Length: 220
Image (cartoon, rainbow, N blue to C red; front, side, top):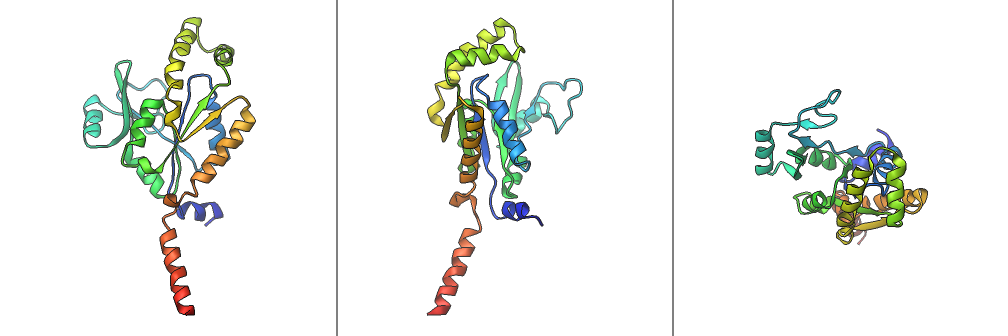
């Protein structure tokens, strides 16, 4: 067993939540975080929309009927869910719970509403929530334009939505201003490293302290 596998088995995994307005750098930072530690899993969402060409069930999404989705919600099987453009989307609880119990972190790329639901869920105590802010609104607009992916109308909609998202920044554990990608990337990795060492994430500590106590008693 490798050192990384031993370390994983000695801790619980984290539910790492990254949120930001479009253009703040969340996707880039998510990718870098998973390159830094390839054991970090990306949460595969469930959806009621029909699969698009090339999409694979269980890899791109868990494709469910609306009836099955609603049943999972009623049974507590979704950590968070939302209704978007006529379809339901959500984060299934069981694969996430299984991962964190096995010491694997799960990464969520969700908005503030989903973050609130996960933080208030049965796994909320294991969440690490991070909000990414742009250095300025002007720079946010520039980044959206420079991607060359959206029309002016779509960019306008994203900009109008951005303030609603930014207004929830204070609800997160950590907030990073992404004015320098390399510096923000380093800070993000430091935050994850520290969160992994929280007492609640180390289930073996109780047994270790009991062992220390026994050794202490034997010396008396």
